[in-house]
Length: 614
Image 1 (tube, helix red, strand yellow):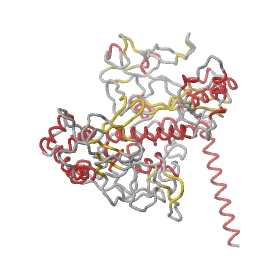
Image 2: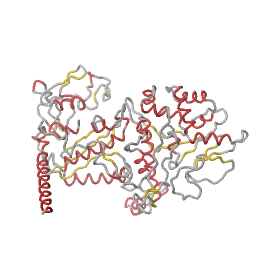
Image 3: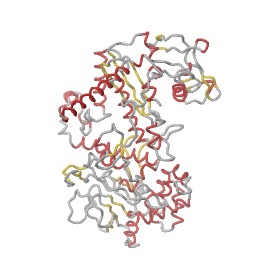
Image 4: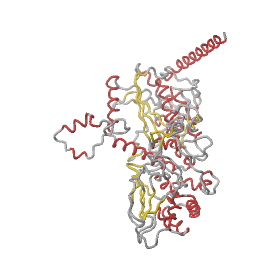
């Protein structure tokens, strides 16, 4: 009898849940055409992604509820030692207890450059104006010079550590990085001499070299393992990190060999365990190991090593996650953290490319039809191709990948016709999910990892609203691409094909380029004022970035119209009513702005989209 009662209650609860879901779905269906101020979707599960409070049961990483289980540690298969606690004064500089905290946090990259032991090689991308992101183009590589400078050469990078006089050493560092404080450099310099194992071992090894010897070498082995331990084991060191070599011997390909006196630079393998610590001595002041190919995965049940090894993506995904009761100092370095993320992503891509290059047979590269066509032509000289490496379509961004996606897009257009909606969904750094995840004093551009994760979840939320809940009606198909702006914020371009085509009479119901009524809808009014007003430019602001030879490159201000019409170029000209015809105005920086300056938006007619933009 008790079992029957429980079954009845469960059935009743399920029916109520299904009824509630159906009611919610009906409310959202076609709601984009019927804008209702009373619709509140901010607490709806399809819109609200919550806060970062979901805890991984294996490693304790904090995530959002919709993020995948294995993004942090592959569900317990990746287990790495925690980073050691930073010594003072670096610790107090990061947590705000030091009087120079504000100064240091604004120049973290410069202070790291003062102490880096290797040089950073890449084509850096600079844009005019405000640019809070770190960008590089092409391949990233690290170079290391000799231990001591050649005759008549000034000490640089690693060589500065062996000058021998604290004041002179600090002066050299400040000379190469203008804007840093000499006293602060001295205190950080002393900290590294006491805490960094590479600095201590280099100095110890150098003391054993005779002053008359000029042919010595120092080596940092790629594999850190005790005697008689198997090659893949990830253990703490039982010997010095740096070994002194007086006579030439055989080294592994990834070993770092540093000459005694030389003016030549050598490239360091990105797979060397010291790659990170030598370039970012402040972030890894204890010389913690970075990624190497020998780290095994762990069986989460038996706690034993398995045959598969940890990839670079798995390693750095684990390393940059926040965890309960664990202070991850990497997130506090602001601009330096952005550089670190770019550098490590380049390493991840390099590993992927190397895998493709070394596994062409597994990928069956000879079966690609375009390659067969090229080889079959008599006018093609195979020597001009160089080494034959075929990038498969699974490699994101490759020509074959782009070709495949283009063909898919053209298939949609050929079968379903032109898309009905083109939506641009832009990341808002003021989203509550981003702001709640920032630490004290941080700005959104200090945490691009949070921006990327939140935006990914928001895109999933909006696509769920459009597809599953049919805000614009039933969807036949869709596609979208994500791009990153110059200022480091992502946006998505979305194409939607609807089963019921949008009629000309419905355009003004879902798309609007007008200022809302501040009395009836003050929330949307403030959103439009903060995010959707162009410029102003032209005579109101001749220094606006959009100005080109005295004219706005975005064609603002637009013409005022009482009705939406199709332009001569096929693009619609949306309704923009003048104040005397019922349009509204707003004041920005002392200027009265009318509807000529509003960017076309789709949030007017849809409560869910309005709340996503908050």
